[in-house]
Image (cartoon, rainbow, N blue to C red; front, side, top):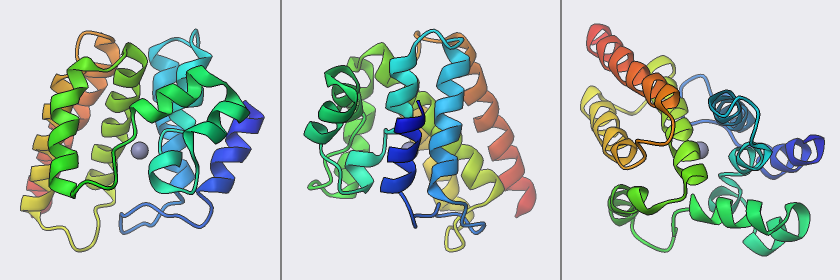
Length: 176
Ligand code: ZN
């Protein structure tokens, strides 16, 4: 576990979250990993490793081959499964997330759920400075559509998502 934490921290070094608080990117990875660890009651180390590495292929100079050499094929495949194809335009990537979510593995669905929880919390408590209310609400609506395709694997994590979604929308409306 130490090796994967070092690897993820190093690959994402210098990166910050989009929110006004500009938290280190690693905080997001730790939050996603903690959520899936809780959801699986610590019984599935592979999903925790996948969570810590889930943005390495998409957002850093890391390849699936490299992950396989470092952490094994299972982890590498899982990370590849939750990686968007960055060659596609953003709107298409977002649409594909909605369409593909129901066909993902259970582990990938857990990471997707936890990722969206962390992102909704981020937008709620430290929104990107240039996002207006409409853009935030659009993100919430899109995240809910992706998560709809991930339901049925972990009721607890789904409840945490629903709570973050509900509380976040209420808070965003109140902040206006
Ligand atoms: Zn993420």
